[in-house]
Image 1 (tube, rainbow, N blue to C red):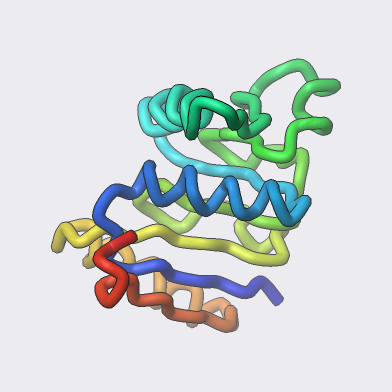
Image 2: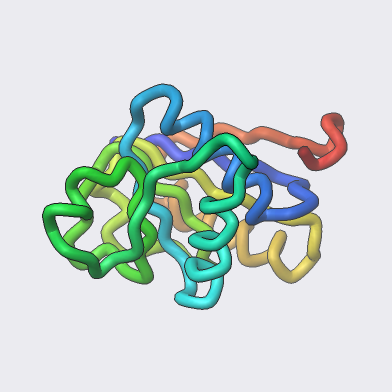
Length: 144
C-alpha cells in the first residue's frame, strides 16, 4: 500500500520542494514530481540554481527514454508511464491518477487557505483508498 506524507504550513512550496528533492537525491532515491506544466518549468529552473556548487540531476518528461531512466528526478504533468515508482512528489492541486503505483507520495501544502482545502480533499481521497498518512506540520520550523 502507498504511504502518504503531508508537509503542511510551507512558506514557499518550490523552495521546499528543492530542499526535499536534494535530500531524496542524496539518499539515492528516484522521484517523479507531478504538477502543472508552469509549476514544473519553474521548478526546472530552480533545480539548476539550488546552490552555486550543486546541481540536482533531473529532466522534464517527456524526454529521451535514455535520459528519463537515468535521471533521479523526473518532472511530469501526468503519470501515464512513470520511469520511477519509488517516490512521488505532488505539486498539483488534485490526487494524481496512478499514485498507487508508487511506494510513497509526498504532498507539499502552503499556508494559503484555498490550498489547504484542496489538501484536505486529497487527504480524504488517500484515506478512502486505504493509504497510511503521516503529517508533518512545519509551522514550528517557520515553514521551512
